[in-house]
Image (cartoon, rainbow, N blue to C red; front, side, top):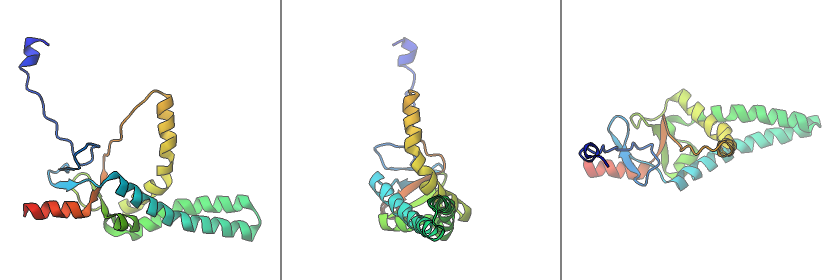
Length: 173
């Protein structure tokens, strides 16, 4: 190590709440604090929401295939419904609270300031979770084949633990 490198101050980087770190308590980008939900709770919330979207999709697909006598028609209609139901479900879930997040005790918030997502954003986030999320394993496989090892970087939203975040603020009040 050179003499100049020894005397350089070591920068301290404080990760935001969206970072995958061992410490779940961290600041949002505006400086307010929150507690990132445990991965098991996030997965549980996503699984419940995915199931709630998948049930009507399968019901419509099966009903259509039975009524028309064509499996192809049933699959096509199921795919169309799979693209529509998440938006409707997301629009009905105001403030980042879906049935899955209510069961898991989490809430989806903006990484910028910890605020709840808006009406249109709720629909997009549910579409992302239930339609685009299943494509992640394919993306990871292609990334591995290409020699990549990119980490997950949250840019806009994060799931917080509602009870732990509230306790954090009660402790500072």
